[in-house]
Image: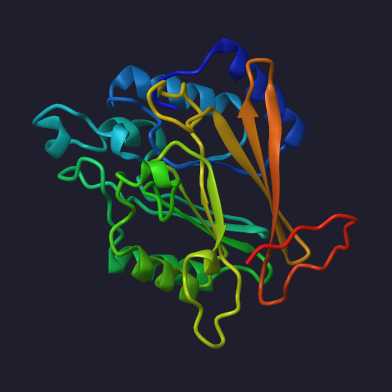
Length: 269
């Protein structure tokens, strides 16, 4: 979001939000580009114009790039709009816990502490039966191979294990400005009894893509949980509107998705 958004894209985003009527908008960091006041103001104005509750967590671009502010007041501009770097949202259908993975002394990489994971587990334990449990932080767990130079969150296997054990069903992040979604077992070996599904999703960027970064685009994900199934829809800005470019379905809980017979199927091992 930090590199700006065209007026046409903003107006179309308002229309899309009005049509989809989401319960919550989650902003997974990098609302600004260099952590400047006017950048935070513009991002907050856009998000609030959607007239939907917003849960925002900071990214590495949301803190000052200049000294000494980077260390003496790293969260001042972010908290001026969002009050806290670790928000949470609770309803009968959703429990969302925001975690701050940004560290001012790290340029790109981030970290989640044991204290943060314990607090997340405590909130998930309080979740109503049937509520979707979501954890969100900025630094990614997985990404496209051409962005491998961007380090994922530190100790990602341990972080994921703690989140799985705490009951997380959806883990969201950003940072690499590209859309990537995987089911937990696509990159983690499950132990016996570890059949419960968890979806790891990396949001595309909402701001202008950088021309030298292959695979970046303006985009967003829409999540819909119902009947032990999570559907993720990816929308991409196509200059003439927000176009639906992918629909992915994942199980929730331990049961697999219902099998659907198709006339043409291709299998690969």
